[in-house]
Image (cartoon, rainbow, N blue to C red):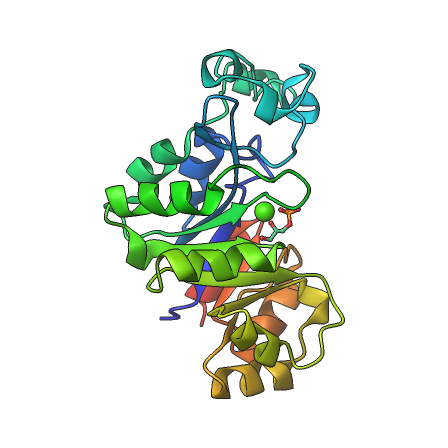
Length: 243
Ligand code: G3P
Ligand code: CA
């Protein structure tokens, strides 16, 4: 019954290697209605889905994403670090995720990973990909780089944006409006129920992250958040089914 968006964080990342096609597919199978992912750019300008700037943690190789060509990056094993069953999973292209979700109505939260490394025209390139797949209504672009969110709105005012932050913002809905953002992607401990109500009155919704505890999910659902970002989309789906 609930329209709340169940975002699988980096896919179903509690049971699959994060940001792989296996994780995205599993999230959808478990009832996720949204996928959260992280985008960066290779040396030859391909948009790839990986959280860290370095490939080390999830592939065992060395170096930064920005210093690999896509051909080189695609040869890395992004699954074995998580478990032998996932040997051979690759770092996907953004377009692979868009193709997977395009006809399912899935909401895709694309986080621009451009805090310390500035990828050339990342905002423009991501929006071009979204427009290529005619998916503007299915997309929320988020970033901890709030200049980047303003740039997204400058490029395409119809693209929804989510303002990522940890904690400590005073009246974050006011700040969201300043940054032209549609949603607050707040660390979930920084969300109070009365703020959710007040933000909504200002036309701003909450998509808190990363909520893995079922009791906390319940509190946030009852508070009226519009979406929840979780490593356990199956748990959130179960909760929403009982509503
Ligand atoms: O979008 C919420 C969350 O993904 C932000 O933190 O480090 O998991 O990308 P991180
Ligand atoms: Ca992220």
